[in-house]
Image (cartoon, rainbow, N blue to C red):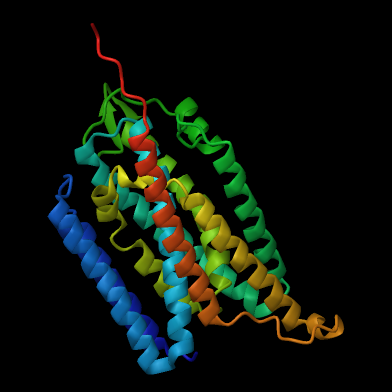
Length: 332
């Protein structure tokens, strides 16, 4: 897929303008978006992604359009899983509802930055070393197993993510007790103090970094076109802030989301390993009588089917749990 420099520049300019409008115009004041505001925004962003994919179809053909849609759906699913972690962080750090929009905006911008860096690094590595597909495939298979194990050890009391960076910030930097609006630092008695919002941003940023490590190998397993990788990631991050408020408690009802993602990541991991074997002609040396390359239409079918089954099964399970929950005893 030959993408000229002017197409890159125009795409980046348009996407920066859209994200800038969302951040600096729609999100100019800290508030909790209404259901109508969130629904309209999500509808617009999804429509833009679909129109873009159809445009890719018209310009470059169905193969690349299929790669974009498969990558977009996969990244969107991973982003929703990321939202669930954001939900836990907001709850555990007691972020006021009216300030959560600001924190989400910063988190999404950080996600874009980290993914942009990993996209560039991944493209350079793939261009020079075909064996990197073995590493990407193995990493995705490891991530899939980790998701299954995390699900099996899941308990009702979710813990906010913790890491050395967060512990270092809490230990070394003095903080105020209460939030000071969206401010990250304030001056008190001649001292510069961080606010709880600073800690929230560090937690969101470190979470974004970990999710970028999963998402970039996943999409490179569906397309090796940096342009499609970039656009699929940006479209997947558009509207996440509104989706956070629109779904709300529904995020917690997607109980099988991690299992569905584990199936998708395992499938893409196997696809990457097969691709690497084909690149080095190892399939011929092993005497395999058919091509190991998995077509994009099959990838798209597996992703859509897995997501549909996951969503339906999750909602059925949540409804069953609600219907069979033991009633709380009232005080005498």
